[in-house]
Image (cartoon, rainbow, N blue to C red; front, side, top):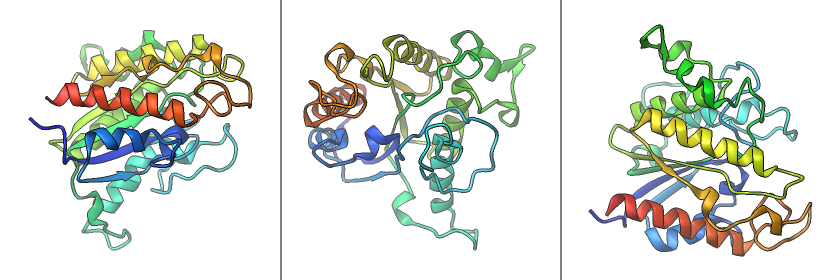
Length: 251
């Protein structure tokens, strides 16, 4: 099966929001995968876990404060997509760009709060089963990374039954801004949730070649422009790594 000429949906945080600029990994990814069409709904500051339960409004905007990101969680990106695909609701504006996708690539986790209550590998199963039975989706706690990921997956699978879905792990950052311990833990958590879902592919972008010890606090290092976001060199590493992972999963 060819990996080219696919319709692709990109979702995620500010690293993916850079899109096809020189600092956007999507540019270098697309140069290899050569999609027939793509949409990017990534939003700065996005995360898998909500700070608190909210009513999704389909408008996943960044409000200017990393501690106030309830509206731009990945689930609200899903809500935006769902509304754009809905032809039957007079309150929504149908957009044919969202009608169908072959590949869905979700890159997030960097901004998720590194606390046990929300980001815990040991409690993944609590978001999937209860007393030996399947936990209903309406009872899943999307204020946790595992719960948020399960909800994102199930909603996207309902919208796009045939799409191949990928979850990417976050990249390393400057130690004082995103500690290696926290990023590694979240990488392992996202991988474990992907294993539990099974019907998704995990892309380990953590191993793309960006190493936090060579990055600086709010200054340009080897691959990051400010200790968090890629420069052109870092974007190439992410884009090439993710493209190779997708290519190998399809061929």
